[in-house]
Every structure is written in structure tokens, then in C-alpha cells.
Picture 1 (cartoon, rainbow, N blue to C red):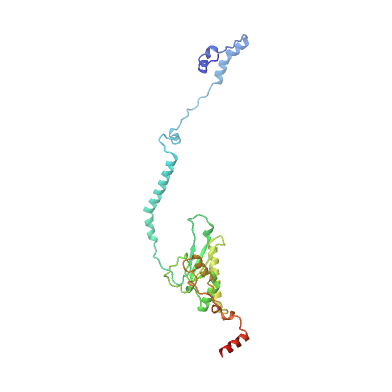
Picture 2 (cartoon, rainbow, N blue to C red):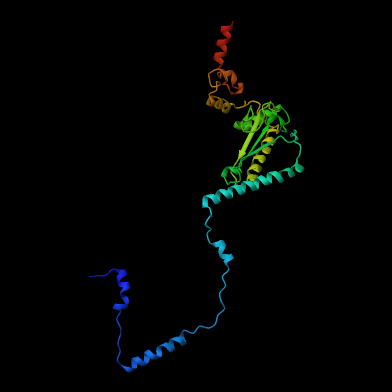
Length: 270
């Protein structure tokens, strides 16, 4: 019959076995053991270990400590309070750096537009766009303005681009607007430099009077395609533009009339 663990612990002194030795050598060893144990157990006098309770007090969790979500909420409140203090005490000091707004004059016609994502890295953050009214560019005469429009191609529009920041009531838009952008280079300054250099080359070529491009009309197909795509009424036939005919083409492009057709036209007139 097996006893329970609690019962066996109670009867342990009774059932413990005793080892009996009859030899004198074992008794001698047993008699010498306590003295040897006392000598081995001798411990030198050491200084008592002092425990700093103040140090351990911060490491032990308090009974009334809040959970992690509560600590995060309190941290958010501290950050908000920090910025509120900045607004209250530091913002009024910026009044000393206030400057009146002076509209740009004719010597600064360029409008440079950039894109920012709040400091986060983005490939489009290096893009730079230049918008300028053609009437404010240093072009010599009407022939240079016409040549500039022909060379600009789809970058010229009669109206200001919607994302250029130009008000419709501003002056200088009688010859349209020119827009050019670049995002091929990794740095914003490099993209702006390329766009500015391209505009300078266009101006130098337009002011060159050796070739005026007077016989080449300004291409407006990109404007008509944009109006048709918007579908705001201008795409309906006859509203935006008339149907092209032979009168719209330069006379130099038309084929020369045949002599027989000229004789027949003269005979019919007589």
C-alpha cells in the first residue's frame, strides 16, 4: 500500500535507515569529521553589505503605476504642451523679422515652382518648373516673339497654366505663357539650372534675325486636344475652331497651278 506524500514526510524519521559500522577505522574517521568540518567552514570577517534602497526603489514597479498606453498618451500631451509653449513665448519674437511684401517687377519675370513632401524623401522633390509670360521676356520685336512661340512648341500656351500660381487678372499675358520643367537630375539646383539654360538658348535663337520663321504658323494642336479632352463645351464641332481649309495653309506650301487649269479659268471668265 503506497502512502501519500504528506504521510511519507511525517513518517520519514521512523523509516530512515541507519548505517552501522563495526570497524574502528570508520569510527575514528567519524570522530574526526566535525573538527575538520569546523576548520573548513571558517569564514573570514567581511564588511557587511549595505543595500541602497533608494536605487532599487526606481527599478521596482510601483503598485499604482499606469500601463504603457497611458504613458504614451501622457507623452503626446507633453509634446503638445511643448509646442504650445513655443507658440506662446517664441512666436511673438518673429515679428522683428517681418518684411513688407513687394510684388516682383518686370526685371524678375520668372516663376519657379517646386514640390515638397514635408521633409520626406521623394523623387519628385527635386523637380523644378519655370513659368514666364512671353511678353516679359527680352525679345526684340514681334518677329522674335513669333519665332519664340514656334520654337517653344507645346510648352507655349495662350493662357496661364493652372498650377503656375498666376492670377488671371495679372498683366503680361497678351502673348501667352511659356512653361518648362526638369526632373532628370538628382539635385533640385541642377534641374533648375538646366531649365534656365534652355530658356536662355531659346531666347538667343529667337532674337537671331537671320531666320524669322515668318512663313511657319504657330502650332496650336496641343491646345485644341486639351480642350477636347476636358469636354467642357469647347470640344463640340465648330465652337473651338473652324474647319481647316486651303486658306489656312501658307501659299508657299500649296502646289503650283497647272497651265491648262489657268487657260480654262481665263476662257470661262471671258
